Length: 276
Image 1 (cartoon, rainbow, N blue to C red):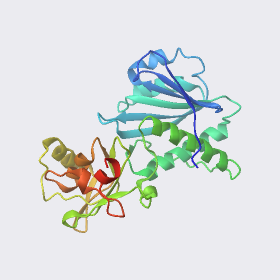
Image 2: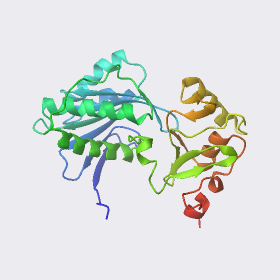
Image 3: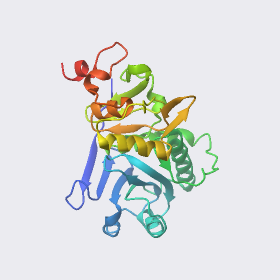
Image 4: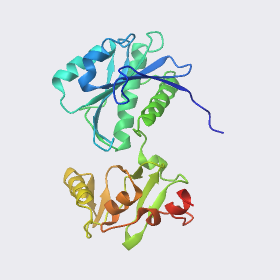
């Protein structure tokens, strides 16, 4: 049985896409979501100068992470001043800060290294960290770091960002597939967005009827998100879409009804699973 989780969210300037602080019930860690234009306003918040780790995010119009940078801070939001001057790619910062007794310096360094490795392994977005920290996590620190990262992953998911590797969920029962025209592609639908998983084949021999989706395919090919391997075009990273049909057209080209195209392992269509 799944365990219920309670979150408290404060919208500090009264806007849903403004500065937010998020705290899980009984947790000693607070999450701060800070749009870059509101960085100066965020500095006025109480408790935002505590130590922790943070993500700098370049977010697309589809709420998808395109680029990400992971760092550590010993003085909270003040660390972002350097990045505001030196890094142009990001438009949002998400900080995970805890009191000094909870996050020791070793804990922060270990958590930063762990988070960078997880971001690189996920292959969901471009990781802007030039190198992975060669920090050796002590055996007795690892369980706590893993526990904290699970909370980070959960909070990020509530904001619409999936952090786990697509390969880690390939065998789950809710994975959908299509094999039309010899193309083998996989995805997951959560009721709002459809995510095509890394490794899915893409049929570039048929152009999409949608000019926007066709442009997405060509951009992904140009950027290396679609690679040509042994005569097949495959996704090198996961892609999210606002509808199953958009995802199906991205994979198969043409004009495709994703509600009947995507099926689970028992052969039931997405239409049968969600609408009937």
